[in-house]
Length: 474
Image 1: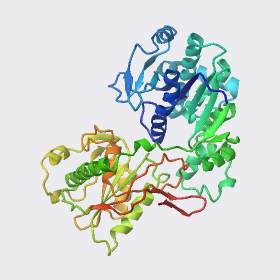
Image 2 (image 1 turned 30 degrees about the vertical axis):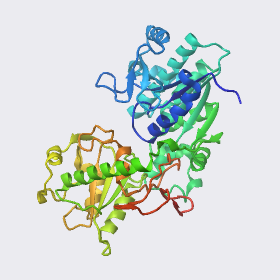
Image 3 (image 1 turned 45 degrees about the vertical axis):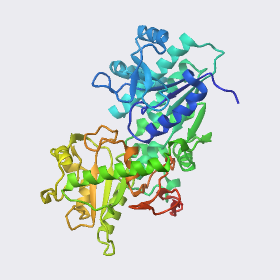
Image 4 (image 1 turned 180 degrees about the horizontal axis):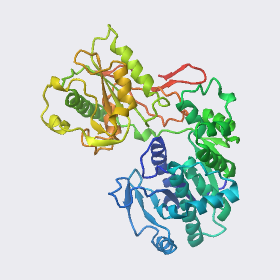
């Protein structure tokens, strides 16, 4: 096997936390960096621009200085520096906004060369398509300035949002080996998210017709062409590989399940210390939200992920909590945290004062939120909670707190990161309906207030959609 001289890795989620791909890429980067050092370069979108400081990005204008100056003279708008994550790998952030004015010309060229069908695309399609185009030009510039035909270059592109970068390079710089990695398919996500039986009728669905039905033809076209034009096509699970064959029409070359770095697991002593700190914070936030004091043996649950109400099993989680709330044998209180980022307006008024000066306040009865929501009347989570009679009344056995922000350690309420808070929970629950089963494995212990309930590690993965058998591993 030939080892490449340079690796570029491209994702909409490089230095831009949106969902699970951010975790996948950021946690595997240090492993690749150890072997390739400065010849491993990540590329992401400059979506922050000048609005405020990107907490994930550390700009350093001395990195790749000579090429950066050349690229800027060519009209490319880029920032170069490091990802503010373990290992601090080199990152190029690309501003694609200057191509908006000529987007029709760019997309017409893709139609003429590849028959990329962009005619039905909206802005959630145009921006990623222009980002991929800009990335292609950046890699082309880097190649022309730094490399020769003797250098072996690999560029890995994640998800359809980067697919136009593959199309650009295959046309302009074909000597770059392009890998396309999809973590789910556009059509599969739409079928599942629209309450159709994806798995029981799997072979009945055709990619193009379903893309037309759900008005995602442009995204599906870009995804399919990226897969067909790439030198290597990969995905993260056998289930998604089946989707690729059915909906895209190409078998994947390699299935690459997401891994887990054992070094991420803290020592037992640190877990105990972290658990005490996290649990204290969670219970104090619960009191600040609902005005009630919760005892030490309160069972704390968490569900998290991207806001895909059915695909991520948020509906099922709420329904299960509603059943638990009517369970007469339940002798201890339960507080469930739904940590799903949404369009929020910052901490709810008064919560920071109540965190500083905690006191019982029955006037807060029926509250759910740590952070305010825009268009709150349309929120599916709050609507389902009320439909299922989960009203956070004092007498309820089960209480629910909705955290609609990223837990990045600077949210104004918890001010601890997601991973710092996790040890404080007794159970994490992910009952997904549509999931490519490429979860980046997260291993935790089951706790009681005095120690472990279970001496072994566990994964809770919900139900396997093909076999309908529960996937619990002890």
